[in-house]
Length: 162
Picture 1 (cartoon, rainbow, N blue to C red):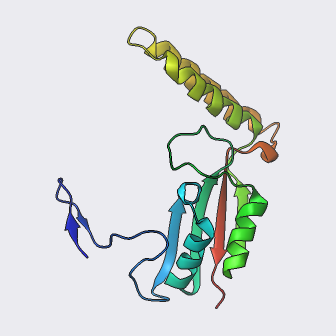
Picture 2 (picture 1 turned 45 degrees about the vertical axis):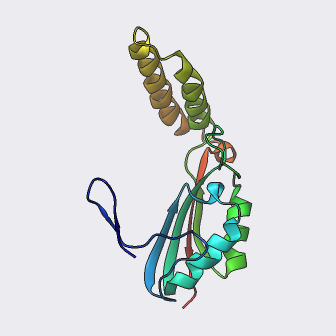
Picture 3 (picture 1 turned 180 degrees about the horizontal axis):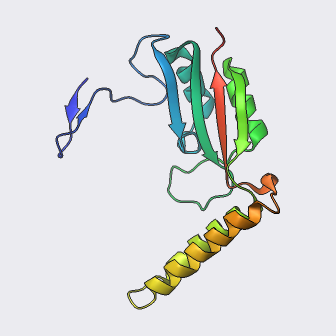
């Protein structure tokens, strides 16, 4: 199915994450970045990604753990154990599962989102500078005191067995 949007960009396939009209085992990689938390049936989407991958193919996914609620379709947050369970239940072998940050970057990001409501034409520069400074300091401090159990996000790389 091809559809053109208003900017002339061609979309090859329009589908849900649960039933993608592509052949079995035809893909080498499936990328789901910040997707699973927006799906009513995330296990079904992970199973569909498994169907699409050729043996030895990889699923790469990121999901939030600590993140502000941001729309009506914001359903889930994922622990490392939850991500592992979703992938292994679908038949995947987990290659890598790691936090993307720790306590200090999570706190800096959450404070930055909290400060967002104070952005006005007269205060935007100060708010932006505060957020940048907090996030800069947090990433440096995590090199000294890394506490990954408070990660705001996680990355999983899983392989369909050969």
